Length: 531
Image 1 (cartoon, rainbow, N blue to C red):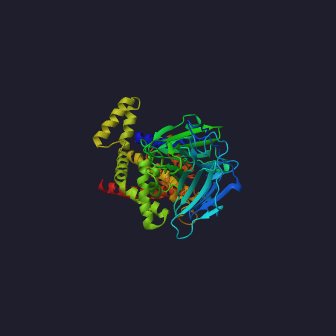
Image 2: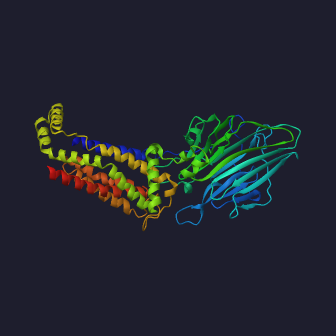
């Protein structure tokens, strides 16, 4: 029994370490770009005189006509905060925070060439464009004429209900010269979040990943921390396919270039200790004199909805970051989604998935409590061995092992469920804080958001009582006063941790504990009946 108690204490310390491990896991970045590494474009500041607005039913874009960059993007179906009337602003250009999606044409004849300090000023027929009802798409062309004989037309294409925006460049070369160009798309974001935008400021719980990511021909999905970019560990990757992205909790922005038989370049860069950039550059392409050419790219600006992102680009759905237990979180989320489609409430779906998980792990739970009951039954013999061989630790251990072998008891038999429960617990945590479907999802009464903490701390306190009840019945045969105090103190510590955990996770743990109590009584009753 001592081994089991020590292991339980070790498990508690291990979980505590995991809870603290990623608490300080954030840092952010900036860039300098030249034609050898990336694109030397400073983030465009807001210019209200040279803006156009483009919107469909789910996204509203503000485009700066100086360069044609998207400097603001609002998600109309998602609120900034719970009970707020304001839509969530994903891309933004403000005095204290910049997050932009830039694109352009570089190369020897590109209007966005690094040698040009003034980016091309595009023109449009009007300054507001909205997708009309029953229309299949909205096309918004903006044009720039260079030297009166080269017309660059940048077209934004939006479709109803879609978060992916097609960016199409049409180059009409009316000159007598051949043009050499390449397209780039890059994402720029302020390194350090202002305090009012930092959802983790003062938060005790684990954080989700905020940073860059990419996919290439050789790598399905790779996260790239802002810390690595700021330390000049820059990316410079050649690939035929893939994408680049910036990730945050629940939402992502990604450039998906056209797949090319030639190689695109993925890059990162950092400058001025202020802004992070990840981007791509297409291979060079030629536009002969008196001819036309088209090059395209796609931009995802929206919630990290896995099924939709998977249709936009291969492996883009992997940007839903479930941490190092993704192989458990992904199937759990799929199961939870199936239950939600049947029940229609995420809270009740969590309760039902708890019953399923407890049913699956019931054989282990049964083995645990039977092992504990047998150990409790052997406690007088164990105490006698301690009394007789207390001064000879080696002999005492040998006698105990002989006793376990004789009675056919595995002293670690009660520990296996701990190994099973903790990964499930952590994978559910990452699933709840990483799945946008659970953002602002209500349950009952005062629980209006299962992905956020209980505002009145009712669920954590209830969880603490259920854990204390299980702990008191499981450790009733502990004779050492110090160990007894430690075991009694653990529910308090866990309750404090759970104060900041998502309400959905606490709900799972409460139901899990209640089922455990019922299973415990049932298993021990049958054991005593047979004994």
